[in-house]
Length: 68
Image: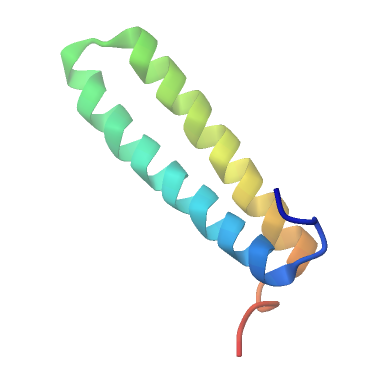
């Protein structure tokens, strides 16, 4: 794993976490109409964790830390 002080890596991790949250939201929407309750629950947990990680990265590096 990369060192924690790398702003470019932090920005990338934030992007990945945001993408994971988005995909989990879409997958949950697909699972709900089919009454796949365990999957719905797990996907919601994934979404919440990913959103938290994306927000934590934003707080650590600032909203425009990676902009050029």
